[in-house]
Length: 103
Image 1: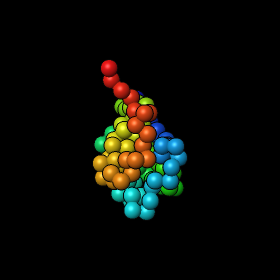
Image 2: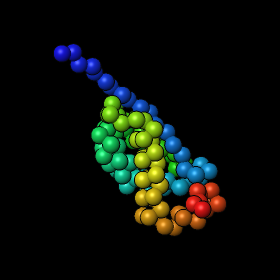
Image 3: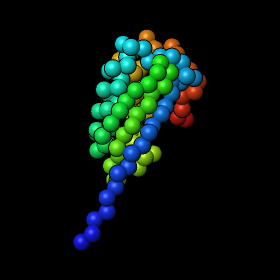
Image 4: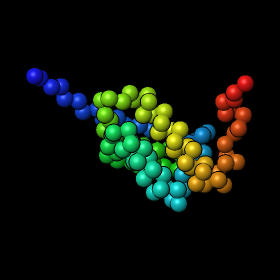
């Protein structure tokens, strides 16, 4: 039986809120490790992670069984929550009026 081969490589780029230069050298290595862990948890492989103080680049190989949208949603939500938990001094930089509210 024939098998299809998938090699799904994605260059992902996302920035900090309002492009604030929040990714310091203290945060950088831990954040990149955390991002790689999220990708691994999604059955992907982080080939390269790098960035600047206001944005991050990831080159990843993704599983064919996960949608890119789902991977990105988890990547951004989990990493944002982790940064705010691990580095609470950054919380004043987040504008709470932009947060979704439930009725």
